Image (cartoon, rainbow, N blue to C red; front, side):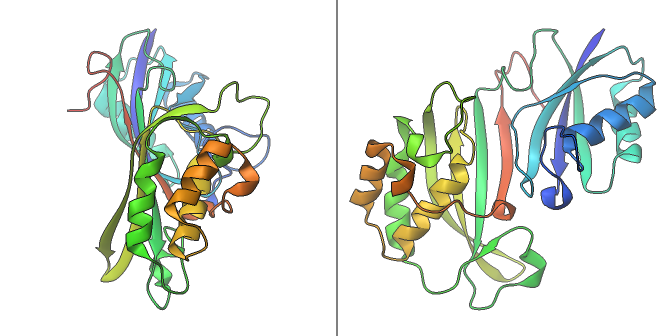
Length: 256
C-alpha cells in the first residue's frame, strides 16, 4: 500500500466545495472518480483544507493510500487526462504512511482579492470581489496586523458544534496592492496554523468596514476581544478567496 500526496489547483466556481457531498460536483468526488478509473480501485482522498463552494485553490494538497503500480509521472498524467478541466494535479510525491494531508499540515495561506477599479473587470468576476466606492487602504493596512497572534477568533466564524475550539494562531495578516490584467487589486493575505469555517471571509468583510470608515482599528481589536460574531462584518462572498499554500515539515513533504 502506497501513500501518495498530490498538489492540486482548481477553479472552485462550479463546485459545491472540496469535500464530497450527496449532491453536486466536489473536488474530492472528482479526484476519487479519476483515481478509480485510472487504477481500478476505490480509495478515499483526504484534503488539507476544506474549501467552500466557489473558493479556489492554487496549492491544495491531498493524499490517497492505494495499491497503484503506476510511477508518479503516470499518476499525474493519467489523473489530469481523466479529471475535468477545472481541476489539475500539479505534482505527486510518495510520502510516509504517517503523512495525513490535513493533520500533518503546520501552516495554511489564503488570499482574498478585491477589485477596486471604478468598473469591475469581467474577466476577474470569478476571482475577485468588486468593491464600489473608495476605500481607506492605509487604515485597512494598519488594522489587519492587529489580528496576528494566538487569539480566540469566535467573532470571525460561524457557530458550529463541530468546532471544539475557536483559538487559532494567525502568523500573518497583511494587505498588498497588485496589478492583474492592467487592473488594480487589493489582496488580503492571511497565514495561520489552521482556519475556522468562514474565518477568512469574515475577516475580509470586517476589514472592509474599516476601509469604508465604519470601524476603526481600535474597534476591530474590540471585535476580536469580545468574541461576538454579531460585532464583526458580513461574510464576504466565496469567489474572491483562494487557498494559495499548505506547508508541512520538510521531513514529511517537500515539493522541490
